Image 1: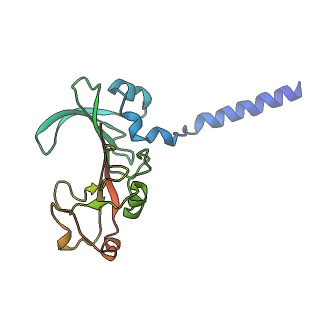
Image 2: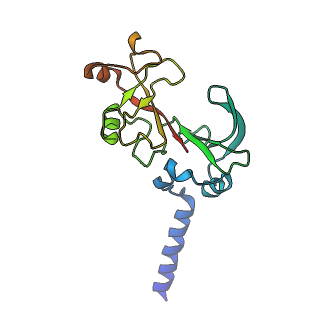
Image 3: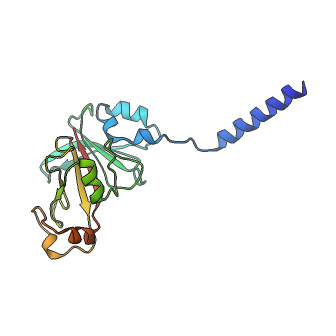
Length: 190
């Protein structure tokens, strides 16, 4: 009887401790490609803790109006989804810029370095200049991610004047190293 009482006491204490601790969030639920086939309602079910905000906004350089939703607003896991339809049944694109848990199934996330992009792509990537709408856009150069639907934008530090504008940057290895290029924004277009 004492053994049974002791076992019940231990189990009771263990369940109390678990109830007071926050639930662990599995890292694999933050893979953007896993969202692509989901409707808005399915996303709400899968991410009940996401504090989802919905609205309609202007996209494509101010030429298209689309419904969108934001998951985990004002947190490092902030993620924006735009929809192709008002019913929010088909995703147009998914984008994020904060260094939270979100990643692509390719292994690319916010902070991925230029050298890592080259390795993951299996071929040298190119990038566009800075200071315009598509600042730091990556060109996959017919590499592994060319037709992946993945669009990556780089950030840099100490950007020289020749590295601004709507053109592919031609730079030496030393110049690229000095820029300290890292992924700043990731978009997955369906």
